[in-house]
Amino acid sequence: MSLFNTDKDFNVISNMIPSGANIIDVGCGDGSLLDYLAKKKNINGRGLEIDQDKIRECLAKGIAVMQGDADIDLIDYPNKSFDYSILTYTLQATKKPKEVLEELVRISDKAIVSFPNFGYWKIRLNLLLNGTMPVSDDLSYSWYETPNLHFCTIFDFINLCEESNIKIEKKCNLKNHSIQKYAKKNWFDNFLLESGMFLISKK
Amino acid sequence: MSKNTIVELASSKNPLVLDCGKSIGPIKTAYTTYGKLNDSKSNAILICHALTGDQYVASEHPITKKDGWWSLLIGPGKSIDTDKYFIICPNVIGGCMGSTGPNEKNPKTGREYGLDFPVITIADMVKAQKLLIDSLGIKKLFSVIGGSMGGMLVLEWLSKFPSLVFSAIPIATTTSHSAQNIALNELARQAIMADPEWKSGNYNEHNTKPTKGLSVARMAAHISYLSEQSLHEKFGRNLQDKTKIEFSFDADFQVESYLRHQGFKFVDRFDANSYLYITRAMDYFDLKTDNNGSLLEAFKDTKAHILCASFTSDWLYPTSENKVITKTFNALGLNVSFVEIDTDNGHDSFLLNEPEFFHTVEGFLDATYKKL
Image (cartoon, rainbow over all chains, first blue to last red; front, side):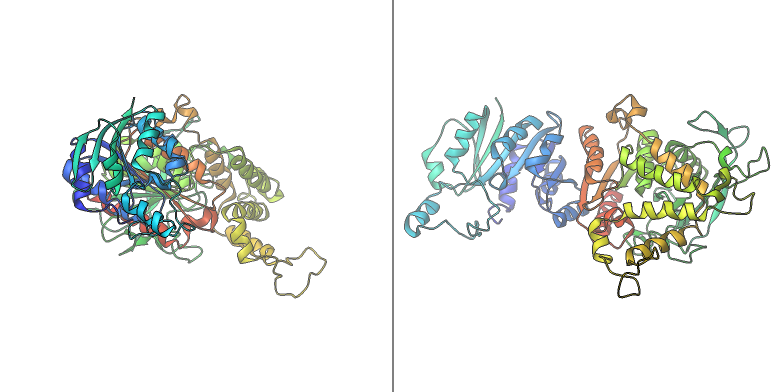
Protein backbone atom coordinates (compact mmCIF):
# COMPACT_ATOMS: atom_id res chain seq x y z
CA MET A 1 0.00 0.00 0.00
CA SER A 2 1.22 3.47 -0.75
CA LEU A 3 -0.02 5.01 2.47
CA PHE A 4 3.24 4.46 4.16
CA ASN A 5 6.59 4.30 2.53
CA THR A 6 8.21 7.68 2.63
CA ASP A 7 11.47 8.35 4.35
CA LYS A 8 9.60 10.76 6.59
CA ASP A 9 7.35 8.00 7.86
CA PHE A 10 10.34 5.74 8.40
CA ASN A 11 11.98 8.61 10.22
CA VAL A 12 9.08 8.93 12.68
CA ILE A 13 9.45 5.28 13.60
CA SER A 14 13.19 5.66 13.81
CA ASN A 15 12.74 8.54 16.26
CA MET A 16 10.75 6.33 18.60
CA ILE A 17 13.38 3.60 18.69
CA PRO A 18 16.64 3.58 20.64
CA SER A 19 19.87 2.59 18.89
CA GLY A 20 20.76 -1.07 18.86
CA ALA A 21 17.23 -2.21 19.76
CA ASN A 22 15.99 -5.72 18.98
CA ILE A 23 13.09 -5.31 16.59
CA ILE A 24 10.57 -7.45 14.77
CA ASP A 25 8.70 -5.96 11.84
CA VAL A 26 5.50 -7.93 11.42
CA GLY A 27 4.48 -7.88 7.79
CA CYS A 28 7.88 -6.48 6.88
CA GLY A 29 7.35 -6.54 3.11
CA ASP A 30 10.62 -6.25 1.21
CA GLY A 31 12.45 -5.27 4.40
CA SER A 32 12.88 -1.56 3.51
CA LEU A 33 12.00 -0.35 6.99
CA LEU A 34 14.27 -2.83 8.76
CA ASP A 35 17.04 -1.97 6.33
CA TYR A 36 16.51 1.75 7.03
CA LEU A 37 16.53 1.20 10.79
CA ALA A 38 19.60 -1.02 10.60
CA LYS A 39 21.51 1.68 8.78
CA LYS A 40 20.22 4.57 10.87
CA LYS A 41 19.87 3.05 14.31
CA ASN A 42 22.02 -0.04 14.08
CA ILE A 43 19.06 -2.15 15.17
CA ASN A 44 19.02 -5.92 15.29
CA GLY A 45 16.04 -6.62 13.06
CA ARG A 46 13.80 -9.59 12.29
CA GLY A 47 10.98 -9.74 9.81
CA LEU A 48 7.80 -11.76 9.49
CA GLU A 49 6.33 -11.83 6.01
CA ILE A 50 3.88 -14.00 4.13
CA ASP A 51 4.88 -13.27 0.53
CA GLN A 52 7.65 -15.39 -0.96
CA ASP A 53 8.95 -12.76 -3.40
CA LYS A 54 9.27 -10.22 -0.64
CA ILE A 55 11.04 -12.74 1.58
CA ARG A 56 13.59 -13.23 -1.16
CA GLU A 57 14.13 -9.47 -1.31
CA CYS A 58 14.62 -9.36 2.47
CA LEU A 59 17.18 -12.16 2.35
CA ALA A 60 19.09 -10.43 -0.42
CA LYS A 61 19.26 -7.36 1.83
CA GLY A 62 20.71 -9.52 4.60
CA ILE A 63 17.59 -9.29 6.72
CA ALA A 64 16.53 -12.30 8.76
CA VAL A 65 12.94 -13.03 7.86
CA MET A 66 10.45 -15.75 8.70
CA GLN A 67 7.78 -16.75 6.27
CA GLY A 68 4.64 -16.60 8.32
CA ASP A 69 1.36 -15.03 9.20
CA ALA A 70 0.78 -12.48 11.97
CA ASP A 71 -2.44 -14.31 12.91
CA ILE A 72 -0.70 -17.65 13.38
CA ASP A 73 3.02 -17.38 13.89
CA LEU A 74 3.56 -14.75 16.58
CA ILE A 75 2.71 -17.44 19.10
CA ASP A 76 6.09 -19.05 18.35
CA TYR A 77 8.01 -16.18 19.93
CA PRO A 78 8.71 -16.29 23.66
CA ASN A 79 7.63 -13.39 25.90
CA LYS A 80 9.75 -10.26 25.54
CA SER A 81 11.73 -11.62 22.60
CA PHE A 82 12.15 -8.08 21.30
CA ASP A 83 12.45 -4.52 22.52
CA TYR A 84 10.06 -3.29 19.86
CA SER A 85 7.62 -4.82 17.45
CA ILE A 86 6.37 -2.89 14.46
CA LEU A 87 3.11 -3.45 12.62
CA THR A 88 2.65 -0.97 9.80
CA TYR A 89 -0.59 -1.03 7.83
CA THR A 90 -1.14 -4.70 8.50
CA LEU A 91 -3.56 -4.71 11.43
CA GLN A 92 -6.56 -4.21 9.16
CA ALA A 93 -5.58 -7.28 7.12
CA THR A 94 -5.35 -9.63 10.09
CA LYS A 95 -8.11 -12.08 10.96
CA LYS A 96 -7.93 -11.36 14.67
CA PRO A 97 -6.62 -7.83 15.28
CA LYS A 98 -7.23 -8.02 19.04
CA GLU A 99 -5.17 -11.19 19.44
CA VAL A 100 -2.46 -9.82 17.18
CA LEU A 101 -2.14 -6.66 19.28
CA GLU A 102 -2.01 -8.72 22.45
CA GLU A 103 0.69 -10.91 20.93
CA LEU A 104 2.72 -7.86 19.92
CA VAL A 105 2.86 -6.46 23.44
CA ARG A 106 3.60 -9.94 24.76
CA ILE A 107 6.60 -10.65 22.51
CA SER A 108 8.05 -7.15 22.80
CA ASP A 109 8.34 -4.41 25.41
CA LYS A 110 6.68 -1.89 23.14
CA ALA A 111 4.86 -2.00 19.84
CA ILE A 112 4.46 0.59 17.11
CA VAL A 113 1.21 0.11 15.22
CA SER A 114 -0.10 2.08 12.26
CA PHE A 115 -3.31 1.66 10.30
CA PRO A 116 -5.57 3.57 7.89
CA ASN A 117 -8.07 5.65 9.84
CA PHE A 118 -11.65 5.15 8.69
CA GLY A 119 -12.73 8.11 10.79
CA TYR A 120 -10.88 10.39 8.35
CA TRP A 121 -13.27 13.03 7.04
CA LYS A 122 -12.78 12.18 3.37
CA ILE A 123 -13.77 8.59 3.99
CA ARG A 124 -16.79 9.71 6.00
CA LEU A 125 -17.73 12.12 3.25
CA ASN A 126 -17.26 9.53 0.54
CA LEU A 127 -19.63 7.13 2.25
CA LEU A 128 -22.07 9.92 3.00
CA LEU A 129 -22.18 11.30 -0.52
CA ASN A 130 -21.59 8.26 -2.71
CA GLY A 131 -23.14 5.66 -0.47
CA THR A 132 -20.45 3.16 -1.50
CA MET A 133 -17.43 1.75 0.29
CA PRO A 134 -14.52 4.16 -0.07
CA VAL A 135 -11.91 3.40 -2.72
CA SER A 136 -8.96 5.75 -3.02
CA ASP A 137 -5.40 5.63 -4.26
CA ASP A 138 -4.28 4.46 -0.87
CA LEU A 139 -7.13 2.03 -0.31
CA SER A 140 -7.45 0.89 -3.85
CA TYR A 141 -9.38 -2.36 -3.43
CA SER A 142 -13.06 -2.82 -4.05
CA TRP A 143 -14.91 -4.17 -1.04
CA TYR A 144 -15.29 -7.65 -2.56
CA GLU A 145 -11.60 -8.21 -3.24
CA THR A 146 -9.86 -6.34 -0.48
CA PRO A 147 -7.38 -8.21 1.70
CA ASN A 148 -8.29 -5.73 4.41
CA LEU A 149 -10.75 -7.46 6.70
CA HIS A 150 -10.94 -5.19 9.72
CA PHE A 151 -10.97 -1.50 9.09
CA CYS A 152 -11.21 0.74 12.12
CA THR A 153 -11.08 4.35 13.16
CA ILE A 154 -8.59 5.87 15.55
CA PHE A 155 -11.34 5.82 18.21
CA ASP A 156 -11.98 2.14 17.57
CA PHE A 157 -8.30 1.41 18.00
CA ILE A 158 -8.12 3.33 21.26
CA ASN A 159 -11.21 1.53 22.56
CA LEU A 160 -9.72 -1.83 21.68
CA CYS A 161 -6.48 -1.00 23.49
CA GLU A 162 -8.47 -0.06 26.61
CA GLU A 163 -10.45 -3.30 26.41
CA SER A 164 -7.30 -5.35 25.93
CA ASN A 165 -5.31 -3.88 28.81
CA ILE A 166 -2.95 -2.18 26.42
CA LYS A 167 -1.43 1.13 27.33
CA ILE A 168 -1.07 3.81 24.65
CA GLU A 169 2.14 5.67 25.35
CA LYS A 170 2.59 7.90 22.33
CA LYS A 171 0.68 9.02 19.30
CA CYS A 172 2.19 10.04 15.98
CA ASN A 173 0.77 12.48 13.53
CA LEU A 174 1.83 11.22 10.14
CA LYS A 175 0.75 14.48 8.53
CA ASN A 176 3.31 16.68 10.26
CA HIS A 177 5.41 13.78 11.53
CA SER A 178 5.21 14.79 15.14
CA ILE A 179 5.34 12.42 18.11
CA GLN A 180 3.39 13.32 21.22
CA LYS A 181 2.74 11.75 24.57
CA TYR A 182 -0.71 10.22 24.45
CA ALA A 183 -3.19 11.76 26.89
CA LYS A 184 -6.74 11.06 25.78
CA LYS A 185 -9.00 10.55 22.80
CA ASN A 186 -8.87 13.48 20.44
CA TRP A 187 -11.85 14.11 18.14
CA PHE A 188 -9.72 16.12 15.71
CA ASP A 189 -7.18 13.33 15.26
CA ASN A 190 -9.96 10.94 14.41
CA PHE A 191 -11.44 13.39 11.92
CA LEU A 192 -8.36 14.90 10.32
CA LEU A 193 -5.76 12.14 10.17
CA GLU A 194 -5.64 9.74 7.26
CA SER A 195 -3.90 7.18 9.39
CA GLY A 196 -3.14 6.48 12.98
CA MET A 197 0.15 5.46 14.52
CA PHE A 198 0.63 4.63 18.18
CA LEU A 199 3.30 3.37 20.51
CA ILE A 200 1.72 0.85 22.82
CA SER A 201 2.76 -1.50 25.60
CA LYS A 202 1.24 -3.95 28.03
CA LYS A 203 -0.50 -2.31 30.99
CA MET B 1 36.30 -29.04 -12.26
CA SER B 2 36.65 -31.27 -9.31
CA LYS B 3 38.35 -34.56 -8.83
CA ASN B 4 37.46 -37.23 -6.36
CA THR B 5 39.96 -37.42 -3.52
CA ILE B 6 40.18 -40.12 -0.89
CA VAL B 7 41.87 -39.12 2.32
CA GLU B 8 42.77 -41.22 5.34
CA LEU B 9 41.70 -39.66 8.65
CA ALA B 10 42.07 -40.68 12.28
CA SER B 11 44.34 -43.66 12.96
CA SER B 12 44.46 -46.92 14.84
CA LYS B 13 46.20 -45.07 17.68
CA ASN B 14 43.85 -42.13 17.55
CA PRO B 15 40.63 -43.60 16.21
CA LEU B 16 37.21 -42.12 15.66
CA VAL B 17 35.16 -43.00 18.74
CA LEU B 18 31.62 -43.80 17.66
CA ASP B 19 28.39 -43.21 19.56
CA CYS B 20 27.87 -46.98 19.86
CA GLY B 21 31.07 -47.17 21.93
CA LYS B 22 33.23 -48.83 19.29
CA SER B 23 36.15 -47.12 17.61
CA ILE B 24 37.34 -47.16 14.03
CA GLY B 25 40.55 -45.83 12.63
CA PRO B 26 41.97 -45.03 10.30
CA ILE B 27 38.92 -44.11 8.27
CA LYS B 28 38.68 -43.11 4.65
CA THR B 29 36.68 -40.16 3.41
CA ALA B 30 36.05 -39.63 -0.29
CA TYR B 31 35.26 -36.05 -1.24
CA THR B 32 35.11 -33.60 -4.09
CA THR B 33 35.88 -29.90 -4.08
CA TYR B 34 34.95 -27.08 -6.43
CA GLY B 35 36.30 -23.57 -6.67
CA LYS B 36 39.28 -22.23 -4.75
CA LEU B 37 39.88 -21.84 -1.05
CA ASN B 38 40.83 -18.19 -0.49
CA ASP B 39 43.94 -17.14 1.41
CA SER B 40 42.07 -16.51 4.64
CA LYS B 41 40.27 -19.85 4.22
CA SER B 42 36.99 -18.09 4.88
CA ASN B 43 34.98 -19.04 1.78
CA ALA B 44 34.47 -22.75 2.42
CA ILE B 45 31.03 -24.27 2.14
CA LEU B 46 30.40 -27.83 3.26
CA ILE B 47 27.67 -29.61 1.32
CA CYS B 48 26.02 -32.52 3.14
CA HIS B 49 24.37 -35.14 0.97
CA ALA B 50 21.14 -37.02 1.58
CA LEU B 51 20.56 -40.76 2.18
CA THR B 52 21.46 -41.96 -1.30
CA GLY B 53 23.54 -38.97 -2.33
CA ASP B 54 27.31 -38.91 -2.55
CA GLN B 55 30.27 -36.62 -3.10
CA TYR B 56 29.44 -36.04 -6.76
CA VAL B 57 27.43 -32.93 -5.99
CA ALA B 58 28.38 -30.83 -8.98
CA SER B 59 30.38 -33.14 -11.23
CA GLU B 60 29.54 -36.13 -13.36
CA HIS B 61 28.74 -39.31 -11.46
CA PRO B 62 31.26 -42.02 -12.38
CA ILE B 63 28.63 -44.79 -12.53
CA THR B 64 25.50 -43.11 -13.85
CA LYS B 65 27.41 -40.55 -15.98
CA LYS B 66 24.77 -38.05 -14.96
CA ASP B 67 25.39 -34.48 -13.80
CA GLY B 68 26.00 -33.99 -10.09
CA TRP B 69 22.91 -34.16 -7.90
CA TRP B 70 23.02 -30.44 -7.14
CA SER B 71 24.62 -29.22 -10.36
CA LEU B 72 21.59 -26.98 -10.97
CA LEU B 73 22.41 -25.13 -7.76
CA ILE B 74 26.21 -25.32 -7.57
CA GLY B 75 28.68 -24.22 -10.22
CA PRO B 76 30.40 -21.23 -11.79
CA GLY B 77 27.98 -18.27 -11.74
CA LYS B 78 25.22 -20.39 -10.18
CA SER B 79 23.34 -19.74 -6.95
CA ILE B 80 26.13 -21.36 -4.96
CA ASP B 81 28.86 -19.81 -7.04
CA THR B 82 32.06 -21.84 -7.32
CA ASP B 83 33.84 -18.74 -8.66
CA LYS B 84 33.29 -17.25 -5.22
CA TYR B 85 33.05 -20.10 -2.75
CA PHE B 86 35.11 -23.20 -2.11
CA ILE B 87 32.76 -26.17 -2.05
CA ILE B 88 33.56 -29.37 -0.19
CA CYS B 89 31.31 -32.40 -0.47
CA PRO B 90 32.33 -35.59 1.32
CA ASN B 91 30.69 -39.00 1.07
CA VAL B 92 29.44 -39.83 4.58
CA ILE B 93 31.00 -42.69 6.50
CA GLY B 94 28.72 -45.68 6.11
CA GLY B 95 28.36 -44.71 2.46
CA CYS B 96 29.46 -46.69 -0.53
CA MET B 97 31.32 -44.29 -2.80
CA GLY B 98 34.77 -44.55 -1.27
CA SER B 99 34.31 -43.51 2.34
CA THR B 100 34.63 -46.08 5.09
CA GLY B 101 31.48 -48.18 5.14
CA PRO B 102 30.16 -51.72 5.35
CA ASN B 103 31.43 -52.66 1.89
CA GLU B 104 35.03 -51.72 2.76
CA LYS B 105 37.61 -54.15 4.07
CA ASN B 106 37.88 -54.52 7.83
CA PRO B 107 41.61 -54.05 8.51
CA LYS B 108 41.39 -56.45 11.46
CA THR B 109 40.02 -59.39 9.50
CA GLY B 110 40.97 -58.55 5.93
CA ARG B 111 37.38 -59.35 5.01
CA GLU B 112 34.64 -56.97 4.03
CA TYR B 113 32.86 -55.54 7.07
CA GLY B 114 29.32 -56.45 6.11
CA LEU B 115 27.26 -56.42 9.27
CA ASP B 116 30.44 -56.33 11.38
CA PHE B 117 30.57 -52.65 10.55
CA PRO B 118 29.59 -50.74 13.68
CA VAL B 119 26.20 -49.04 13.69
CA ILE B 120 26.95 -45.39 13.07
CA THR B 121 25.00 -42.22 13.77
CA ILE B 122 24.52 -38.84 12.15
CA ALA B 123 26.84 -37.47 14.85
CA ASP B 124 29.52 -40.00 13.84
CA MET B 125 29.25 -38.87 10.22
CA VAL B 126 29.70 -35.27 11.33
CA LYS B 127 32.69 -36.16 13.52
CA ALA B 128 34.30 -37.70 10.44
CA GLN B 129 33.48 -34.58 8.39
CA LYS B 130 35.06 -32.45 11.09
CA LEU B 131 38.30 -34.44 10.71
CA LEU B 132 38.22 -33.70 6.99
CA ILE B 133 37.68 -29.98 7.56
CA ASP B 134 40.56 -29.97 10.07
CA SER B 135 42.80 -31.73 7.57
CA LEU B 136 42.06 -29.00 5.02
CA GLY B 137 43.18 -26.39 7.56
CA ILE B 138 39.77 -24.71 7.67
CA LYS B 139 39.01 -23.12 11.02
CA LYS B 140 35.51 -21.95 10.24
CA LEU B 141 33.08 -22.96 7.53
CA PHE B 142 31.35 -20.05 5.85
CA SER B 143 28.31 -22.27 5.45
CA VAL B 144 27.04 -25.81 5.92
CA ILE B 145 24.23 -26.74 3.58
CA GLY B 146 22.15 -29.86 3.09
CA GLY B 147 18.66 -31.23 2.53
CA SER B 148 16.86 -34.22 4.02
CA MET B 149 19.51 -36.32 5.80
CA GLY B 150 21.94 -33.60 4.69
CA GLY B 151 19.83 -31.22 6.76
CA MET B 152 20.26 -33.48 9.79
CA LEU B 153 24.01 -33.28 9.31
CA VAL B 154 23.73 -29.48 9.13
CA LEU B 155 21.79 -29.42 12.41
CA GLU B 156 24.33 -31.74 14.00
CA TRP B 157 27.15 -29.40 12.91
CA LEU B 158 25.32 -26.46 14.50
CA SER B 159 24.85 -28.43 17.69
CA LYS B 160 28.27 -30.10 18.06
CA PHE B 161 30.63 -27.63 16.44
CA PRO B 162 28.85 -24.27 16.80
CA SER B 163 32.03 -22.19 16.70
CA LEU B 164 32.99 -23.70 13.34
CA VAL B 165 29.85 -22.68 11.48
CA PHE B 166 29.25 -19.10 10.35
CA SER B 167 26.03 -19.83 8.49
CA ALA B 168 23.84 -22.83 7.78
CA ILE B 169 21.01 -23.88 5.48
CA PRO B 170 19.11 -26.94 6.75
CA ILE B 171 16.54 -27.86 4.09
CA ALA B 172 13.47 -30.10 4.25
CA THR B 173 14.65 -31.89 7.36
CA THR B 174 13.88 -32.72 10.98
CA THR B 175 15.45 -32.92 14.42
CA SER B 176 14.21 -36.51 14.76
CA HIS B 177 12.41 -39.09 12.67
CA SER B 178 8.70 -39.52 13.20
CA ALA B 179 7.18 -42.99 13.60
CA GLN B 180 6.12 -42.71 9.95
CA ASN B 181 9.70 -41.92 8.86
CA ILE B 182 11.04 -44.90 10.82
CA ALA B 183 8.29 -47.13 9.46
CA LEU B 184 9.19 -46.28 5.87
CA ASN B 185 12.87 -46.97 6.54
CA GLU B 186 12.01 -50.26 8.22
CA LEU B 187 10.01 -51.26 5.16
CA ALA B 188 13.09 -50.59 3.03
CA ARG B 189 15.41 -52.50 5.33
CA GLN B 190 13.10 -55.49 5.52
CA ALA B 191 12.85 -55.54 1.73
CA ILE B 192 16.65 -55.78 1.51
CA MET B 193 17.00 -58.38 4.24
CA ALA B 194 14.17 -60.48 2.83
CA ASP B 195 16.08 -60.89 -0.43
CA PRO B 196 17.75 -64.36 -0.28
CA GLU B 197 20.72 -62.87 -2.12
CA TRP B 198 21.41 -60.59 0.83
CA LYS B 199 23.08 -63.58 2.56
CA SER B 200 23.05 -61.97 6.03
CA GLY B 201 24.94 -59.04 4.62
CA ASN B 202 27.77 -61.08 3.11
CA TYR B 203 26.54 -60.98 -0.47
CA ASN B 204 29.83 -59.79 -1.95
CA GLU B 205 31.64 -62.83 -0.58
CA HIS B 206 29.05 -64.94 -2.33
CA ASN B 207 29.47 -62.94 -5.52
CA THR B 208 25.87 -61.94 -5.56
CA LYS B 209 23.73 -58.87 -4.76
CA PRO B 210 20.31 -58.34 -3.19
CA THR B 211 19.25 -56.29 -6.18
CA LYS B 212 15.57 -57.15 -5.86
CA GLY B 213 15.38 -56.18 -2.22
CA LEU B 214 17.34 -52.99 -2.72
CA SER B 215 15.26 -51.98 -5.68
CA VAL B 216 12.00 -52.52 -3.76
CA ALA B 217 13.49 -50.43 -0.95
CA ARG B 218 14.21 -47.69 -3.45
CA MET B 219 10.72 -47.91 -4.95
CA ALA B 220 9.10 -47.46 -1.54
CA ALA B 221 11.38 -44.58 -0.68
CA HIS B 222 10.86 -42.96 -4.04
CA ILE B 223 7.11 -42.76 -3.46
CA SER B 224 7.80 -40.87 -0.26
CA TYR B 225 9.91 -38.34 -2.17
CA LEU B 226 7.02 -37.38 -4.46
CA SER B 227 3.68 -35.80 -3.72
CA GLU B 228 0.30 -37.22 -4.56
CA GLN B 229 -0.18 -34.25 -6.86
CA SER B 230 3.05 -34.78 -8.78
CA LEU B 231 2.39 -38.51 -9.19
CA HIS B 232 -1.07 -37.72 -10.43
CA GLU B 233 0.16 -35.11 -12.88
CA LYS B 234 3.05 -37.21 -14.15
CA PHE B 235 1.21 -40.49 -14.54
CA GLY B 236 -2.42 -40.39 -13.50
CA ARG B 237 -3.83 -43.80 -14.46
CA ASN B 238 -2.04 -43.75 -17.80
CA LEU B 239 -1.11 -47.13 -19.22
CA GLN B 240 2.42 -48.04 -20.29
CA ASP B 241 2.76 -48.64 -24.04
CA LYS B 242 -0.69 -50.18 -24.24
CA THR B 243 -4.26 -49.13 -24.73
CA LYS B 244 -6.01 -51.40 -22.22
CA ILE B 245 -5.22 -53.32 -19.07
CA GLU B 246 -3.89 -56.82 -19.68
CA PHE B 247 -5.13 -58.74 -16.67
CA SER B 248 -1.57 -59.56 -15.63
CA PHE B 249 1.04 -58.39 -13.17
CA ASP B 250 3.24 -56.75 -15.73
CA ALA B 251 3.69 -53.01 -15.50
CA ASP B 252 0.34 -52.01 -16.97
CA PHE B 253 0.42 -48.54 -15.50
CA GLN B 254 3.06 -45.94 -16.27
CA VAL B 255 3.62 -45.32 -12.59
CA GLU B 256 4.53 -48.99 -12.12
CA SER B 257 6.97 -48.89 -14.96
CA TYR B 258 8.49 -45.68 -13.64
CA LEU B 259 8.98 -47.06 -10.15
CA ARG B 260 10.49 -50.29 -11.47
CA HIS B 261 12.90 -48.23 -13.51
CA GLN B 262 13.82 -46.12 -10.47
CA GLY B 263 14.50 -49.25 -8.42
CA PHE B 264 16.35 -50.96 -11.24
CA LYS B 265 18.82 -48.17 -11.97
CA PHE B 266 19.43 -47.50 -8.27
CA VAL B 267 21.06 -50.88 -7.58
CA ASP B 268 23.91 -50.08 -9.97
CA ARG B 269 25.12 -47.22 -7.86
CA PHE B 270 24.19 -48.09 -4.32
CA ASP B 271 25.13 -50.72 -1.79
CA ALA B 272 22.44 -52.58 0.14
CA ASN B 273 24.31 -52.68 3.45
CA SER B 274 25.05 -48.97 3.19
CA TYR B 275 21.32 -48.45 2.82
CA LEU B 276 20.72 -50.36 6.05
CA TYR B 277 23.36 -48.45 7.98
CA ILE B 278 22.48 -44.99 6.77
CA THR B 279 18.72 -45.38 7.27
CA ARG B 280 19.48 -46.64 10.78
CA ALA B 281 21.58 -43.55 11.47
CA MET B 282 18.67 -41.36 10.34
CA ASP B 283 16.22 -43.24 12.57
CA TYR B 284 18.49 -42.88 15.59
CA PHE B 285 18.96 -39.14 15.05
CA ASP B 286 17.23 -37.31 17.89
CA LEU B 287 18.67 -33.96 18.88
CA LYS B 288 16.09 -33.40 21.58
CA THR B 289 16.61 -36.67 23.46
CA ASP B 290 20.37 -36.36 23.06
CA ASN B 291 20.26 -32.97 24.76
CA ASN B 292 18.33 -33.64 27.93
CA GLY B 293 15.03 -33.35 26.16
CA SER B 294 15.63 -29.79 25.03
CA LEU B 295 16.27 -28.49 21.54
CA LEU B 296 17.20 -25.15 23.10
CA GLU B 297 19.99 -27.00 24.86
CA ALA B 298 21.05 -28.63 21.58
CA PHE B 299 21.66 -25.30 19.88
CA LYS B 300 22.53 -23.11 22.86
CA ASP B 301 26.03 -22.23 21.68
CA THR B 302 25.44 -21.46 18.03
CA LYS B 303 25.62 -17.91 16.73
CA ALA B 304 25.22 -18.87 13.10
CA HIS B 305 23.12 -17.08 10.50
CA ILE B 306 20.56 -19.66 9.49
CA LEU B 307 18.15 -20.12 6.61
CA CYS B 308 15.62 -22.93 6.98
CA ALA B 309 13.60 -24.02 3.96
CA SER B 310 10.72 -26.42 3.48
CA PHE B 311 8.42 -27.31 0.58
CA THR B 312 4.64 -27.15 0.69
CA SER B 313 4.05 -30.63 -0.79
CA ASP B 314 6.76 -32.43 1.21
CA TRP B 315 5.03 -34.98 3.44
CA LEU B 316 8.22 -36.83 4.40
CA TYR B 317 9.74 -33.86 6.23
CA PRO B 318 6.79 -31.50 6.24
CA THR B 319 6.83 -27.79 6.98
CA SER B 320 5.63 -28.48 10.53
CA GLU B 321 8.84 -30.43 11.24
CA ASN B 322 10.98 -27.66 9.81
CA LYS B 323 9.09 -25.11 11.86
CA VAL B 324 10.08 -26.93 15.05
CA ILE B 325 13.64 -26.10 14.05
CA THR B 326 12.99 -22.43 13.24
CA LYS B 327 10.98 -22.03 16.42
CA THR B 328 13.94 -23.21 18.44
CA PHE B 329 16.33 -20.84 16.67
CA ASN B 330 13.84 -18.02 17.18
CA ALA B 331 13.54 -18.76 20.86
CA LEU B 332 17.32 -18.55 21.07
CA GLY B 333 17.21 -15.13 19.42
CA LEU B 334 19.30 -16.33 16.49
CA ASN B 335 19.55 -14.66 13.14
CA VAL B 336 17.20 -17.14 11.48
CA SER B 337 15.13 -16.96 8.33
CA PHE B 338 12.52 -19.40 7.15
CA VAL B 339 10.93 -19.88 3.78
CA GLU B 340 8.33 -22.40 2.64
CA ILE B 341 8.64 -22.88 -1.11
CA ASP B 342 5.35 -23.42 -2.89
CA THR B 343 5.70 -26.46 -5.13
CA ASP B 344 4.01 -29.74 -6.08
CA ASN B 345 7.28 -31.66 -6.32
CA GLY B 346 7.22 -33.13 -2.81
CA HIS B 347 10.31 -33.89 -0.78
CA ASP B 348 12.35 -34.24 -3.97
CA SER B 349 11.91 -30.50 -4.60
CA PHE B 350 15.25 -29.66 -3.05
CA LEU B 351 17.01 -31.63 -5.79
CA LEU B 352 14.89 -30.33 -8.67
CA ASN B 353 14.80 -27.15 -10.68
CA GLU B 354 13.09 -24.81 -8.24
CA PRO B 355 14.21 -21.29 -9.25
CA GLU B 356 12.45 -19.68 -6.28
CA PHE B 357 14.42 -21.90 -3.92
CA PHE B 358 17.70 -21.28 -5.77
CA HIS B 359 17.22 -17.50 -5.67
CA THR B 360 16.41 -17.63 -1.98
CA VAL B 361 19.60 -19.55 -1.22
CA GLU B 362 21.63 -17.23 -3.44
CA GLY B 363 20.32 -14.04 -1.81
CA PHE B 364 20.91 -15.42 1.66
CA LEU B 365 24.48 -16.53 0.92
CA ASP B 366 25.43 -13.29 -0.85
CA ALA B 367 24.11 -11.11 1.95
CA THR B 368 25.58 -13.34 4.65
CA TYR B 369 29.00 -13.42 2.97
CA LYS B 370 29.13 -9.64 3.33
CA LYS B 371 28.75 -10.07 7.08
CA LEU B 372 31.90 -12.18 7.40
